[in-house]
Image (cartoon, rainbow, N blue to C red):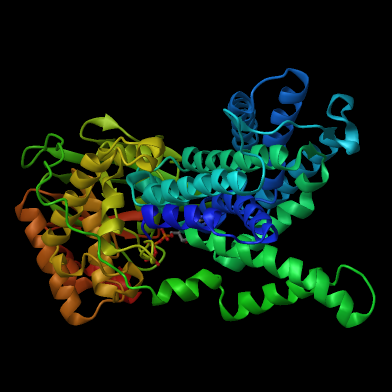
Length: 583
Ligand SMILES: Nc1ncnc2c1ncn2[C@@H]1O[C@H](COP(=O)(O)OP(=O)(O)OP(=O)(O)O)[C@@H](O)[C@H]1O
């Protein structure tokens, strides 16, 4: 949707002779939309559930109300102060709670919401549960922006700014990193994404949006008290996000609008229907939520989004400058040196003093029967697991003990045994995530669209790597629609995007058809010809024998033998290990 067309629509609505009742409704919808836009980013896109957003609305509202009443400051100044206090609170709360996973995070946000509610209700200076009265309006010259149509304009311009800055953010390097959070930390960290930093970042942005809504609310109402900032409202905001479509920016506005309109209509209709007064609308909302979750699990906007024409991202990257590349190891240089690595899980020694090396321009296969310890060795090299003893050196430096994103930064790229990608993002965007560490632009420059030159360079790299693996025809397809073969190639292209000196492939042939395996073998041979070093963990013996230069065989966590494919094929010990017969 075009920002200017929407802005024009807002000005038109303000100008039309609509009854004041509807302007008031739209004002509240705008206030809610701001909070829910934050939730779309945090919960729908980032996968972090928060019941505590109403508390951030409260911080924005109370800060501005208190300072305008008691210190006589201008609301234009107090909004910034509210944002500052909100930012500090969000950083502290986020830093503590966002390390938690599963149910703990929502529980922690409930605790935070409750704590703040009771704090607001018990502090004398904040008027306890009666709150603060006589909050002055927001003025611009002689114009009072806190009433009716002027307030409508102010609120909805802010909603548009928030919505389009989110859209810009999601279409950027930072946005891809944020979207990767939902797939789990392992893939994101392997792409060099500092997941905790990004989680705190989206928590902060969502809190700031809520704080602005609180500021507007305080000056619109002219009074603040704790009840709109309690946990009930924390739940209600989440409800709006889920109803509208938590994965979509416009889902936020849809959810806020439907909830407000439905609530108002039901509050009038239902008591008439039942003949008594009561909060029947809550029951109806519960039923609506269950129905939406059953029939439109991605929210009401998803229904619209599926029917909107989809334009592929216009190609503006072809002319961009290529990204800088790291220095390459010379052919034959020692790239990976695994020295007596051991991993113990309780009493089980999964990897028992394994040593081997990979040289530049070599494809080394790591094979062995199920449970031999291949994946564990792979995870030790990539930093997913810590070593019990031993050492891993990459290009001469010890990398064991480093977090996986640091190992990725040094030039080790990987794919996953079970493909990990972002299904609702295009192939091109998924692959561009691999170049995360080669870009530097952050959230603010993305929101303001100052990141475009860098973004074009990143997309150019992604398109180039897709061409390298023969997928140049699928740039704009959604990754979730790909067959298994192209999915595996997507992962390889994504890994190549980081400009690696070593590529670690975890069972890339698993689930592939014969033709797809042939295509994969072709890509691997071509990469080797270009000087890439590859460690290949694989069960498919045809592929391993076909493409590797050297093979390391593991059995029960130990090093059984190593040699050329021919030597390994002829080894009675290897045959026995696979067939389970005598050595
Ligand atoms: N996190 C863990 N905790 C305990 N034991 C583990 C853990 N991960 C792996 N193991 C054990 O370590 C051994 C080696 O497992 P690993 O997955 O590395 O083997 P693999 O050779 O990759 O097998 P496959 O080919 O089936 O993937 C197995 O006995 C496995 O059960």
